[in-house]
Length: 179
Image (cartoon, rainbow, N blue to C red; front, side, top):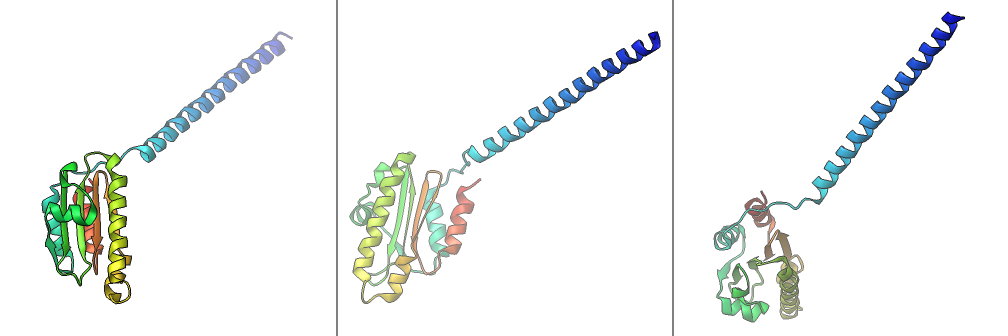
């Protein structure tokens, strides 16, 4: 009987040890799963980093990639066409249409803070509506350009471009700003 009791006690002890080992492996798996979940959340919520750029140099490079002819414009023209004060931003460069019969243009803005984004977007939208009203009815090619206008934001940089082919400029802007 003594052997049976010892055998039962050993079985009970081994079951308890096995249960503890199983329970520890479950806790370990749960801990690893939680760490992996937190890492995924961190990856999804972290803010992208952007390079600091010289808006004048980048704008000039983007203009060279445009198949359209545009001309550098003064801050006064920016105020007239967009209602934006250049000194309200860290940097602002505008290349406008070479003639009144063209719609191609490029605006690159370095925002002081992201709260300015909405007002710049509104100014761009007003500009698009104005240009549509000017070319509606007779400037079919120019209307197509205006309808395909792009506004791209990376960090605190905003690019507005109206062009026959803005794909190269868009890629170059991304390359210049995104780390």
